[in-house]
Amino acid sequence: MTLRLIQFVTATGERRVAAAQDDGSAQVVNGVSSTYELATAAIREGISLDAKVTALGLGEAVDIAVALSEGRVLAPIDHPDSAHLHVTGTGLTHLGSAESRNKMHQAAASGEENLTDSMRMFLMGVEGGKPEAGKVGAQPEWFYKGNGATLVGPNVPLQSPSFAEDAGEEPEMAGIYIIGEDGNAYRLGFALANEFSDHIVEKQNYLWLAHSKLRPASIGVEIRTGDLPKSVEGTARITRGNEVVWEKPFLSGEDNMSHTFANLEYHHFKYALFRQPGDIHVHCFGTSTASFGDGIRTQDGDVFEIEASPFVFGLRNELTTTKEEKIVVRAL
Image (cartoon, rainbow, N blue to C red; front, top):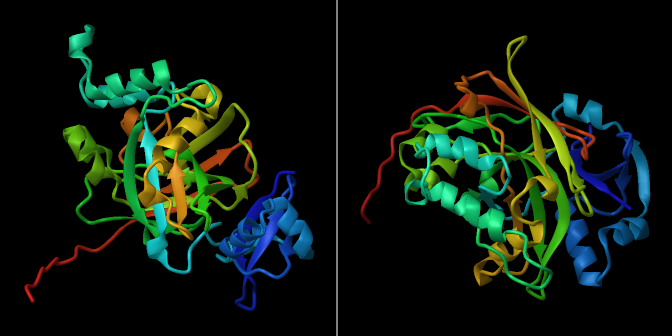
């Protein structure tokens, strides 16, 4: 059974979790106030999320569309201590992802000796990112985005820092994980993600990828439990006022990727640092589509919209820019 777990606030201000069906209808999950509470209980009891929801039972109906319109839907996962939530990602994982990246880094027309480092890494994934079961495949590009303070939910503005040179969307799938007391990673499911980045900084020097990724990220309304379909079809768009200034389909899922999810998960969780009991991980799996590659320059007030077929609800965030801050480091 596929669950769609949603965190929201009731009209009276109480946090609750809802389980939604494929048609968008939803009911409150009894006895829990957060997805984290629900999932950690399932891990502790050694049962699936489906079994735990069944054991708790479902209560009153919830109109998620109304909750969204009233700003009462939260990110579908969060941690009581934001320092224990990690937002990370892997890049150059999709079969179309190298083209725009390689353009960015000025690839030569031909010749192995002239390939960019990005293209070399992409080809490593094509050749070895889908190993046989039980074997370790090629290591992907990896990056860190931040902790729980970085993560925003649907309809919440994505804030670009005042020093940013670009504020661009990246429509992706994100895996949602909790580390159990046994030190193992447990995948709750997948969510839509906008892995927001600064492409101009990265374009200047690919070694600045780390800087370009230290931005907020947004994840969608629902966590979809279970495996993703092998092919995921979605659409990303940018609206400016009443005008759609950019719109493009995107593909995800393993049929459209150069790595398996299992291989990407292994190369993230092989580090003991990322297997600390109680921690949450939101791991973005990459994309092949971004408006920056089509020459789009975003501006404050633009709205990013991402939707994909396995998810009932889309992801929507407005772009804003923070005020310039004076950074002072004082000696003690």
